[in-house]
Length: 109
Image (spheres, rainbow, N blue to C red):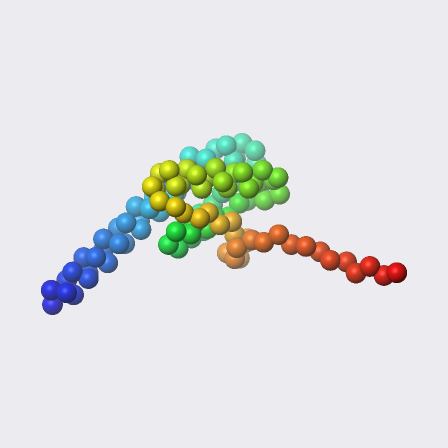
């Protein structure tokens, strides 16, 4: 019985910690958002899974050459505010991590 109570308290505490982390993450994104919107872009929090923070870049940020620098800046702020390493992962529309696409055209000679 005592173990069950301790587990419930630990689970509640972990849930509270996760909520606090998510609030910090949202605050960092909200802080950088005006700069992104000024240039026609935005960043949305998709999911937090452990130390992985998945975000979706939208608008002008999608094709911007400096989007990787933007993500690095957001990640640095997150690490500073959270006091722990987190990995910022850009995702595509479906929520899957985005990967550069390469079109291969066969050469016919």
